[in-house]
Length: 200
Ligand code: ZN
Image (tube, rainbow, N blue to C red; front, side, top):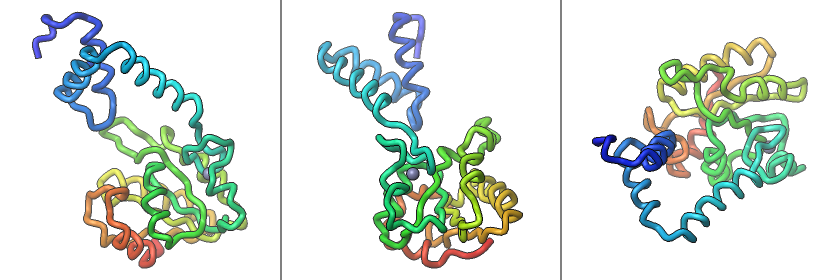
């Protein structure tokens, strides 16, 4: 794209969209053009929904799941067993696992995976929060993390950190195709993966 032909404000908008996950330069340009063609009301609605969502939605103080309350629905549910913690990369993975109806424990959301290439170290994830949750009541930590390069790195890191705490660490079995995202796995495959988890 010939950036000299674009006004600065438009370039800035394209630049901001490019920071979003999965948005490349072409998509960022397409979205920016789409927005400047909209009437003012539509743009204000978009702006307002972003601000409102950011204001209302916070992270659960226990598991870092997205929540509108201090504790998320799962952590505040007295029927969920608190001894088993299923560790996922993103909050959206919880929805995929809940659909399987195979897991009745609680979760912990890392908000990403370790990726040296992208400069994401363990300190950028909610790992400290996970470790501080583990106590004498904790029986099993189930790692439900995709078998990508970043997933493998994160799994190894967590295993080393948790094992010395005398807690069983398991990983879900992979009928899930290697490299695929957990949230896109079909419910039956994922249910089998949880059922067939193995100690690591
Ligand atoms: Zn929670």
